[in-house]
Image 1 (cartoon, rainbow, N blue to C red):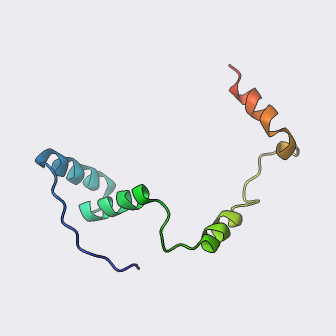
Image 2 (cartoon, rainbow, N blue to C red):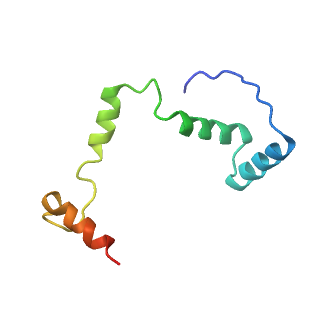
Length: 85
């Protein structure tokens, strides 16, 4: 687990109430809610190396099946057909 650092943030009463309500609905603490949203805002971890990101992306290859044997060649045709009204 990454080392944490205490940070003080001021919010309005309305923002505090909204955060508490949202955290309650998600069954997490306000701190955990904020940590998740900050991680989402910042994006991939700075500590994650390019090699690690490539490994993670490549691990998804071949995991899903479209049922189309020619999808790599005709992907534009399939996309256009799905976009028609």
